Length: 500
Image 1 (spheres, one colour):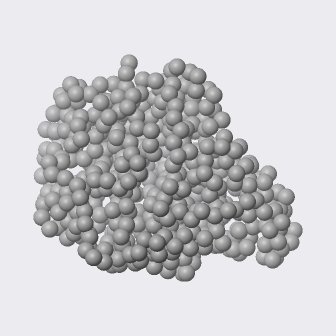
Image 2 (tube, one colour):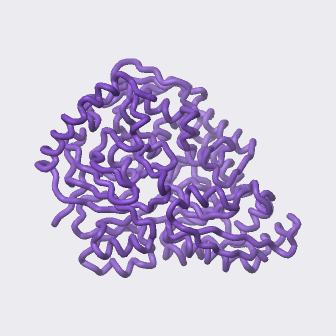
Image 3 (cartoon, helix red, strand yellow):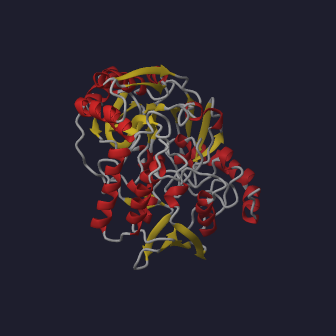
């Protein structure tokens, strides 16, 4: 078991700090904010940010990162106050914030940083976040609030990489229990963890940015997307960040609700396993992707509120985004299918679920769009609960969704040959070499070109059809105040309030 002496002493203070929290929270914060999660990981749902089943609606409120994106999307200090590198960007020094305490009352320091990041890198844990920090060779403790990270390559974008929403700092030695306790330095603390019911978070009165405005946050399991909309309408939850755009009219003139639309790097798409016939032929999978009308999908599914993507996972605002044109090409798709040995077309089944409210519509629109190219599609609806364990990366064609990540992180995590979450089973040594070359290149212009070339390779050979990056329709009860109109990982949760 990963227990250190430091963590042993931290456990001794849990009862004391819990009593203090109960008294202080009642005084400093008020009201309950209620939201939902989709139980997509079923029984594997947990509070370990680096695991497959992480319940991010909780961990982003209980655990901090070293570096975060500010409200303008710029990497900014969080638990690290500043950083610098040597000339060739192979060594990075991070100065840590002093006076920060974990929820158990113990001090945050360099030992916790070393432990948290080395745990991500531990191959025995098999974290999906591992590839994103694979360039970190060693983490050296300089003093109690300074760490030096030595890399195995030059990498000018390390601070940007550390904004990954899963790279949260936890107490040294807490790996065995973090999945249930969720202990961090964040504005809220886990009072009750019930993944299939209601998880209760309580305000952290000692939060380093100030006591939260809300006394409690309740995170309720509601697997079905439409049921979450009904829960919002009935007052069972106060916020839903995934409301389908075709339901905007229900809320926009209703004084009981507020809504906002934000652009994000999140994407929805369809995955073809490149290790499974007929999608093991790159011409077949490109033909399927060419037969799709992306702008029509944006208009039909998102009401026009999305940014077309030519199958690149890199968000439109990312400095390394490769902008391409990819209009629907039925004739070109037919030609590729014939060259691949399928002159009469192919048949395929898309496995979708109501876990993500737009998936069924996307699948049905694709079904209609690709038919003229001789691609016959059957849409099979499967259970939402446990979708990520039982369907995704199992069936030949599935629906997928991803939250935004920096370009290097998402390209490594979704497409590198060694990536645990390489959902399309894409194996391309030239692509892997491009990613390695980009990390080593210190010149920004040259580095950008390499990343863009890698994205073009996905357009030519990839197995993931990414039609667009979504704009998010966020609806809240009118009781909710001070919610930042930004993507979920940059929200200042301690500032949110609810009014009766």
